[in-house]
Length: 158
Image (tube, rainbow, N blue to C red; front, top):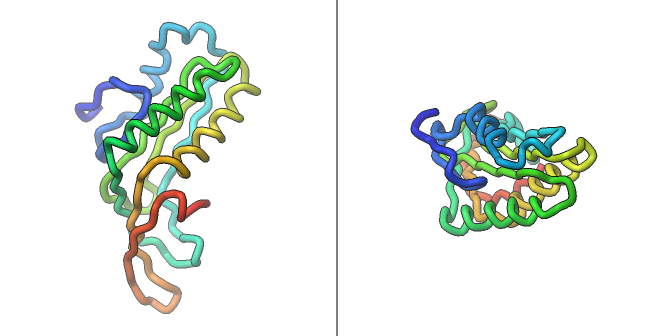
């Protein structure tokens, strides 16, 4: 588990401090879990190409942590109020990442599959738009030029 303890249903965490299996276990420890009939997950990973057809070499992620934690928690709390939803968690990782590495975990537990898929999609769209999380892309163009630049999560949609 790398020293991470499930203390909140959402937040930003340094890379290597969140264990996905422990996250699922914490979901199952929810006192209302007996009402769940479905769990859906979204795992965001570093893509090898960006929207400009550049090869991504690596990403660096940072956040305005206090505000990001508050925003992610508020999104989860809002979505948990929806009919049939038992729990919603969003955990975004920070640090330096290579192509293929996990960046974010979003999990939703609910009574029925029809309840959970829409909430999962809404959770992903909302964190991308609302949370102050920033990424620095290190890229190589098709001409072999390398460069790096910061973008807010919502600006790099895809």
